[in-house]
Image (tube, rainbow, N blue to C red; front, side, top):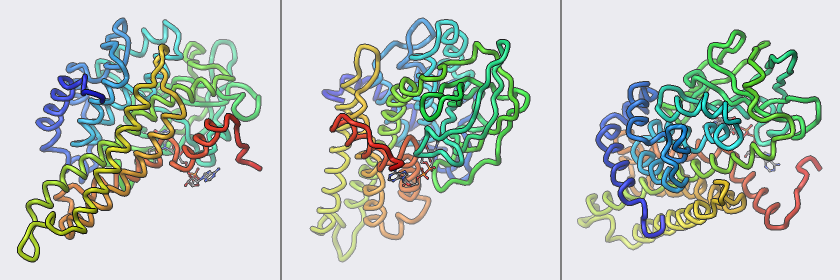
Length: 384
Ligand SMILES: Cc1cc2nc3c(=O)[nH]c(=O)nc-3n(C[C@H](O)[C@H](O)[C@H](O)COP(=O)(O)OP(=O)(O)OC[C@H]3O[C@@H](n4cnc5c(N)ncnc54)[C@H](O)[C@@H]3O)c2cc1C
């Protein structure tokens, strides 16, 4: 962040991440172990889960940029821990914060901010990924009860989270017009989960399908009625800022480890950094990380009085950071030689995670489509 106005919180976050999660991050990845409830409660006690939430619900009322600093420091060390901070500050809880009623905010936010409960988001479906508005999950309202039917795919923290913000069709209107969102609690009769996915990365962040078979929830769980897709995706820009920061941290961590390695590792009688081609590769890493950081900071600085970042700046930052993390971790692997290919050095873990963050939250291709659309001020119909 410019002038690092969040230096103190950055220092505290880095220290906790290093001391608590540094020793267990590799094991969490190898065994796909999620953050425990106790660990999450500790993150809540430290105030890390409510940074970007209002004080009246237990948060700190700080700017989104401060939450991003904390996500970044944790993500450099342990993505499953960073994910908890990401999810609470930039994920579905922000849908509640920005679009929920006063009663819904009081009902749901304090438990998320304290770490007692977690919330996941269900948008994607087997036949509706990039084409999110093709979703088929329905929520029909009769006599004060909402009946949810359908299937969500690739849901991070699926099966683990206590509550789900489920994007669904709340009216028969086609495309985006019929879409809204409803909150469904884990344990509701008819709500079940698929097997935990064995993802390439994201290990320690469970992923599962959600199945809704005539799941009944009270009408007061409708968070956004039909016609609110634009508002939902407006708030999703905040999640994309969290995603961008995850990628930035992955690139930065790969760079930090590489800077150390090239000084220590010797070949042909001298440290790797003495070879000009290695210097060029390292310079490319620095260049790409810094470019992504500037765009992330620019997007974070664009947050308006409503707490919403500028959509164009967010897509520029996400696209750049996602692709940077894939390239920079690849360069780090190359520079680390055989060591980079082992679990011990953590580079292959960074590379695997980089790919996951570049798909989640909308691929770089979809960000490019958004960029052109914003720059030209017109929408492109992907069906033609
Ligand atoms: C690690 C991970 C975590 C995730 N977490 C969640 C979550 O918590 N909640 C949730 O709802 N979803 C989640 N997702 C799903 C994610 O949002 C989707 O995977 C993503 O939007 C892409 O959809 P898809 O996988 O169906 O790919 P597809 O949409 O089938 O796309 C396949 C390829 O085609 C390209 N493509 C698609 N349409 C176009 C077009 N019009 N023009 C050019 N190229 C195009 C894409 O860019 C991509 O390269 C997660 C995914 C991953 C991998």
